[in-house]
Image (cartoon, rainbow, N blue to C red; front, side, top):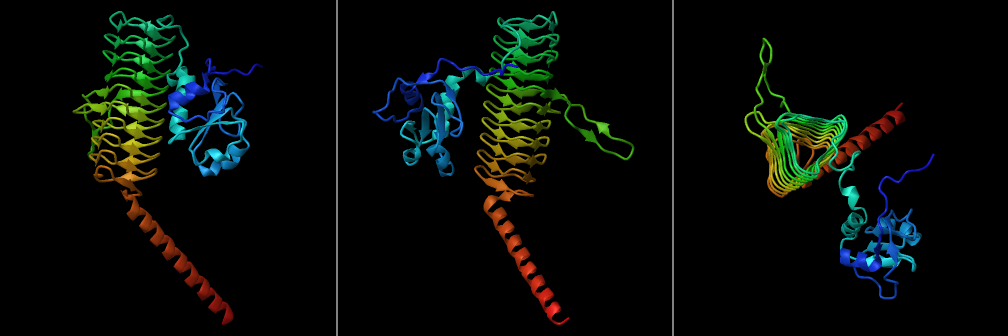
Length: 358
């Protein structure tokens, strides 16, 4: 059985091109026309590969690497063998990503099973409007009145609901369901996402639970990316909104009426309860939970496995359950550890006395 390469190499880049792209300093003694075709970690890199070194933890791997070139800092460059082209920058990993994007531009957007503009095997309602170059893969359904912008790809078995709007150059993954939603341009929705279903709203009572009508929409602005298996509920009495440039990981739950600002980052298994607000550039670590009607201020960061019950000031760094300023959280952990150690010593001393006195 042959071994496939799913993301094939491009023509590569010369060291000069890499240095220009990354804003890196390149030793003059090197052959600047040397071509780099691939990226790899230090311990697996070959002479045609680019790697990076930005941490003292990896200097032993750096000393033994066979990479053709490595992006690193001026302070760490001394650990690289003489045959490695050391390109020095302030932020090696950021520079590495910039070069990798140039080497593998096709990796920045999910690929399609069909040729551009092909809708063979899909069900597209006669009243749906598709601009030029829209690809709809086999088994996908595009509902009545839906509109899809030029260059967008609708994955196999995905469903685009009635009157949904999908912007240009979007990618909707296989098995995704989009309803009651408006999507901007260059939005990426990975496989299995569910966007625009009912929010979870019930008035509880002794005779049963009264379902609250969910009459809002989901608004997803330009350049948003949403990971596989994530769900975004439509609003109940106002729209659920995800701001421009926000990146959401796999298996995240966004409740109804939630407002997420621009360029936020939500890591896997985060849950945001209804009517909460995340201002611009908020970061939520993995498995963070946000209670309903909470506001997290601009630029705030919440540590992984934390639960937020009240408003968080702009620029704050909180963690724990309930979440609080990180310094206070760490102080409480240290106090508990000291108390536990003190109790342990006291119990051991008491056991020793009991042994001596039979």
